[in-house]
Length: 471
Image 1: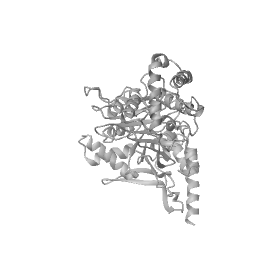
Image 2: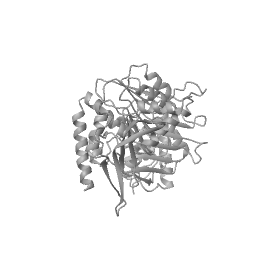
Image 3: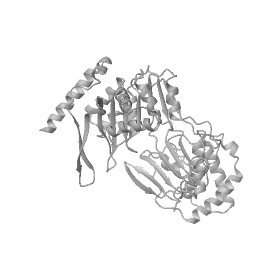
Image 4: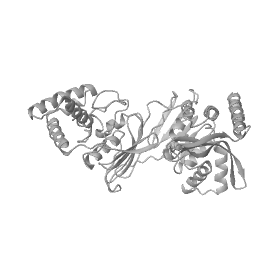
């Protein structure tokens, strides 16, 4: 019986990394390879350990690192066949191929993670110590049988991932944000903070970038709502994208940025660069953690403040989570129209409250009313995303910031999603509807950019839909 794929030894620093979308062990593009749901027997790991030790002694790692993935795989195959013959290990051809895939994953890639990284249908990979790996597929979390040999192997893989972008993770620096070469977002937390071994979380990068048209097709938003989002991206409206973890904030931000003109200079600021802007004039900036001496840290606020000296036309902040909120609002209100950012909040009003809290906690000695006036003058629209109980993702609000009455920020919803219940299969039932706002506050801005006809058509169609719903 062939051995299912799993890992033993840590990837070797300096060895070639497989190309995105390829399984290191196979050298072929993988559509949706299956994940083994059963664990290997101890005898498998004994055989593999014996072969792997002999292979490491026989192979020239420096020369292997110079080869491309396919050539390196063939080199490993030749040595593996020799070892099996010398040690009189009885294996079928299929078992040898499985073992070759497994060892190639260890030497050339990220070990047991390789089959998971090759699957397009996986959104998240969650490793809770060496023996427990979960994945998210279609909004649902499920356990896999994938495992690492031990926590030492897992830690080595974590260190290799973060070292590729010049970061480190160890006892002195036990938390790290990083990214894979394909753009997938990575978070690592290791002992002593993580009690049961290293915890590795990967938010998978999608090679096929989602568009607003696809979001409409997936019923995340109505066609009319999608047209309004296109107008928002095109006519330089200041936008906050709000939502919980896994609600699709970054995906929606990527969709909006597709409608930025090619001649605009866009600067992005992120903790781990993951935005996928398609414009030709984009400058990508990324924060930096402190070094071993605790020096050299570059924070998000440092990046946003430096943006203002780089002649930006739009500033996009991957996630607003601290005092950089003040600098982003300043940028939005001083000639950088069309700037965007994301933050964690459960609804549009809470998003605005969180902005105020971030500024206050950042040490700015400003009256609450002054901060709220700044928010009203800077933020035009809040777009709220949510992941529902059945795993589906919806855009639940498109909300305008109208102004300040007394000390209260006034907002108005253009589109909302009404939850109606769920069917017998547990699928959430609901509908998007227009609130009937005939002319939003950014109407004149849309006219300036020649988008008022598209905006009017979307609002008219939404009103027709609203009337039909009422009837």
